[in-house]
Length: 267
Image 1: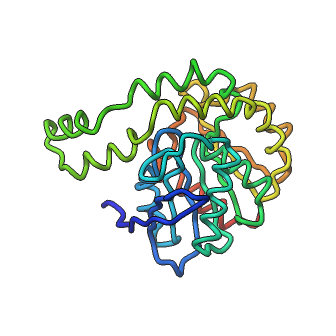
Image 2: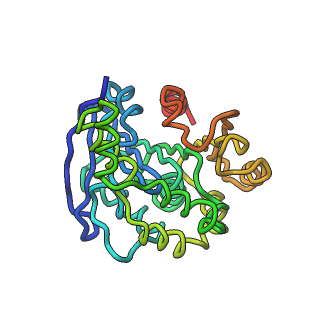
Image 3: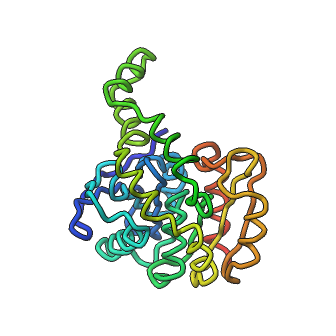
């Protein structure tokens, strides 16, 4: 069963900002933040399992999905500020936070610099050191798998799927601009070193779920050990052996279980 959600817009930092909501607003708040070249709709399976326990807000980050795509303004600090402004504007009360990949980077900054805005933070295979070679290892691969809306519609029609399924596929995985993606990787190259500074001063309780490097995760075994050694005492690390970078896509129920355990713990 697909989780039902409402589709909404607001203005954040001068941008028309799109977000989706699941669950009753009277429930505890949870913010979900997606990674590069996707949208808030990628959280659909996770939201489906959590909507009875949380009021969920999943935004489309600037440059992605149905949110505006400015020509500039793609520093990680701008993304973090967008999410904090959204939390304030929607009057969310110390929401829990889950961020995947680029959303994990955003969450790292929030846990360190805006810890009063959130209660607990989960970072799902954040992109740390790989920013130094993103031009070679990440960006070309993402751009190469981008398809036009017409191509997706034809593929889905040929496979007997509905127009809505095709529309969701486009929104999830193809609603981004290659030029902006290249800009993001360029202006944030220093993040490969800055991430350690932020990780070392996270004030909010933070759980890092690290994918298996051998299965396509973004953090090597050596980096995993190093990051554990320099992280704040507020940070906890868990390695998902045999699971690649797309953790909540491939194992949404496992992510949900990890989240419920961490959010209800005393830490």
